[in-house]
Image (cartoon, rainbow, N blue to C red; front, side, top):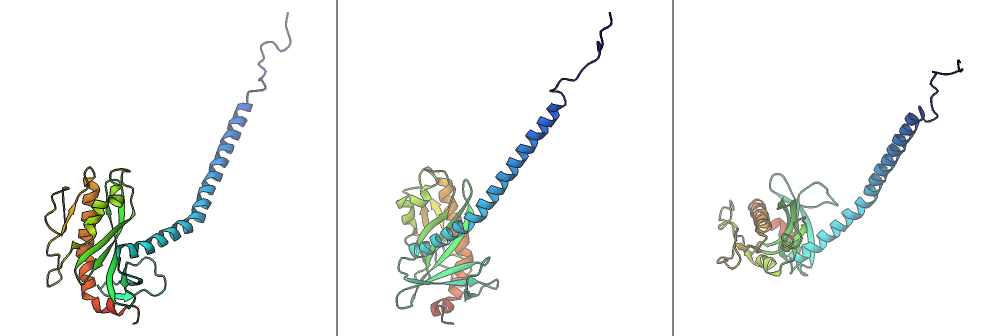
Length: 237
């Protein structure tokens, strides 16, 4: 007996619908991904000015932290030919140093930003330099991602920070180099005032600070000494 439709295959309701549901899922996921991406971009754009503002304010406070005798400051732009000039307005993407003055307008020191590779990432510091005594008078970490509890001690360890209260960076008479290049020594082995005592257990981070200061002082201190008259005049130029 022949049954009508026997042997013919009827597609079930689910077949063909699988492709549609897969497409919808991909579309939904793609839309969510796009929205999430847009949200990240928008959030970044909105928060970036706040982050930049916070960094700028932290930098301004840090200048006075590393120049303890300064009560006012003036930014100077380091030109490519090794001369200095007062900053005009807010100049971005130029290397600046910050001259600190006392209440009477006398130059008491210069704050200098410097960067270098740490154990985890780039370490960004600022240090104070007294050009009359030729010593570093303060150091502060502006940005660091060093290991919490060990490498991060470069920001908090009082004994390590004490290294930078009167660290000798005397230049040769021709201003070509340091008389005694800065060097790192183990804790308890400091015998000279151009040596930096390392933090026990954070030798790499301690050496990173030493290397950053050594490179920067060799490059920037001769420029400061050659332009002392410009710095002493302040912004009245």
